[in-house]
Amino acid sequence: MIEIFETNSPQETENLGKKLANDAVAGQVFTLIGDLGVGKTVFTQGFAAGLDITEAICSPTFTIVQVYDTGRLPFYHFDVYRIGDIEEMDEIGYEDYIYGDGVSLIEWANLIEDILPEHLTRITIEKNLEKGFDYRKITVESI
Ligand code: ADP
Ligand code: MG
Image (tube, rainbow, N blue to C red):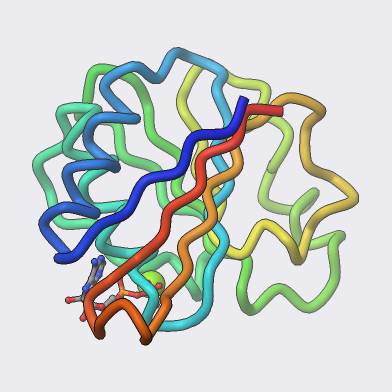
């Protein structure tokens, strides 16, 4: 199933993240794909709020994964942008997270395509400058 959303402010993108996380269940994996500055962190902040996590989300770029345990489900936030070798994912216990009892969200998941689970919700955020500087097209696809 594919759904397409359009937002025109960071707040709207955050709200969409929140809405999607409200319905998230244990074991669900989301991937988040989009260029630098497109709104992945904004979306993720809303997503965390939708899991009842109130703390600020910081980008886990240097640790690959950041775990938040204060929400209604554990939240595993991955950012694999700086991954050098896919084996680094084994080293951090990647499978224990994605097949675990929390909700996983993986930024730049296209870089670890080969080891993504079979079922996931793929979220793609894109700009379209013809539609304004703050316009974002957000595609949500369950596979
Ligand atoms: P990324 O994590 O993808 O690199 P960020 O979420 O850190 O990007 O930054 C997105 C930037 O775009 C923020 O400065 C935000 O205020 C701005 N922005 C403008 N319009 C939107 C929108 N519709 N949705 C999300 N962010 C937006
Ligand atoms: Mg970011």
